[in-house]
Image (cartoon, rainbow, N blue to C red):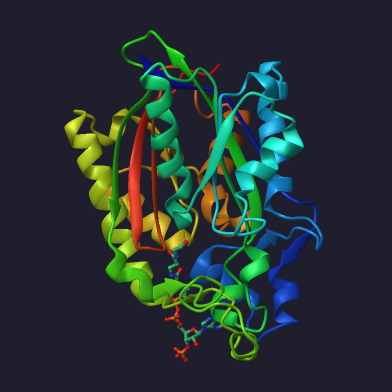
Length: 329
Ligand code: UT7
């Protein structure tokens, strides 16, 4: 039994935050942001709405595409670093908003690798025959944990969500073919949000010291991201006897255009083999890959039988690659 993607959808808020807007907020400029990151604008979710709102919209689009109801879902996995609340899970909020009456679910905290970790996790429940319909969602409201006075981070991140439905297939060579996932927690100090968890609960001091925002040592993360995404992607291609020309589309995590270009170049892939939408949305953390996949599908850049390679790197450090044979027409 194989797990195949039978539906894909995404949602981004309407409100745009452009490089020109950021020029008014911090000491930055359009030229720096564009040349160093490739980002031109990001989407920002309104105050009062949370991650589950975007997750529900993305999942609803998948179900509309499929012509199915939420009652058919067996499992909802929400990959996110910006849950609505620490307790309960965002998956619980999504289940409730979708009114999915016959399922269970949980959140998966994998930072920017959250979606590919969730995809590998969800596929196990399908491959074992345990579940028939698994909704895997990547959703983040990064604007909730970004300091808009810190130019090191506020120019990079944005909000969004993407979702896929996994279902079983009898075909032997289809769907989620392989994955290589890795975790190296010694990297935690280079990218994290210091307070708000059990290590440093919220207090007046943590608020005063602005410790509830993401902090990142950009250069260190940058170097590791290129090396590790290239390494796992090369390895997964090699062990599945695939050469660069066999890959129809690389869907990399969208953190920085220079990282994407370097990884693609090292893998021997041409520009038209790479999905890039970072210019429109910035880094939406767990949402980048399903968002790019959904757009690539809409643009008919993937057709049944194509090899699709996904790769991500982020907080943890956590990184990985998923190889899949596309099935959806
Ligand atoms: O998704 C999770 C994983 N995250 C990533 O993969 C992100 C990886 N890192 C990056 O994408 C890049 O490191 C950044 C985009 C975050 C930063 O780019 P960089 O080329 O590594 O710049 P830098 O931090 O080394 O800073 C270079 C210069 C510095 O000035 P000096 O010291 O050379 O005078 C910074 O102060 O650019 C300055 N700078 C800025 N200038 C204008 C930093 N941020 C800005 C800014 N606008 N927003």
